[in-house]
Image (tube, rainbow, N blue to C red; front, side, top):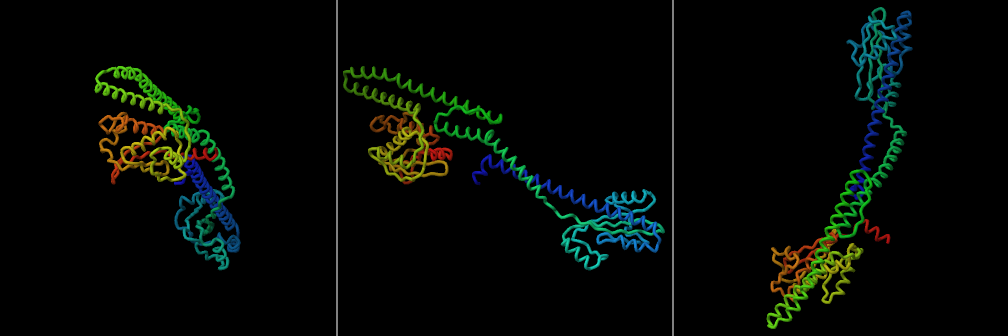
Length: 469
């Protein structure tokens, strides 16, 4: 689905346009139908009035003039005939009540005069018109194109001397007419509503929602985010207020934990120094060396803990970097180096020194325990994956997650030279997760360990800001 239609703004605009179009179509249809009903009613009443006048004229004129009156009254669509039997052989239908009432009123309102009316619709084109001359009938059919439905009315009025005035008429449904004024009115109405809707959506709804979305994304990557202004409808203000509270709580929690960790590591230095001094005073060589080694190991763990705390509390600014160039520079700076299969034009927003430290820890592990590191880059629409593969023995499946715990070491000898401090992967995951990413481990089928570092690619907003700078 195109991005413009997939957005809340696009869907609301489409909904408004669709609703306006449906409402306008229904309105026009009702208008046209009302027009048709009004025209047909007027034609029916006009025919009824003519029939009443002809009936009165026949009753007042001498018999010798009656046929002349009928011929003069006939027209292409209304025909008159004087007969001993009525053309309508039943009482009037309900639909003809208005016509009957009009005729009776024009005839003086006499209740004893019998008037019969029959109305029926001709569905399939125009019915035959034998009373018209062939040329007139053909001309009428050509004009109507044989497509318009028609209403045929038969009217029988009792006149003097027991005769019946039979009237037959037909009036077609008017063709549909879509006035241009309606389309212009629809366009003006739609434009006004859309301008108003865009103003409301941009300033009161989607604008604040986009700010919350971008702020949540930056917060998830560890960036400092100022409290958002409380604007928009009450629901949006409530969402913004909840985000501001969540941000404040998370910031306090991380800050308190970092300060506690830093204070703990700092306070341990003094007793460790004292222990080192006392260990040096032990006379027995083996015991002294064992105690000094343990103190040094503890000291190294404390130093790593302090470095970990400083990394978490780092105020390093975020930068948008081109990932391939960033990794190539890292390869140049590392002594042992690594193989790199890079993809150009992938931009990532990160803290360069922090992520550099995380990747060094991962690559150093691959070089130390796996005989070298092979780094490749893959990506999808929203994320980039940095794969670090080695040819070592791998890690038991049960311990793939456990190795991320602080001070956990696979090498059980506790030797600093072979096992390190056990904080490298823990620090790497903490840094990557602070950027909204993830670090996972898996054993390769062909042997060795695969470390996958996932980071979010820059958003469209960040790309626009980079292009403008």
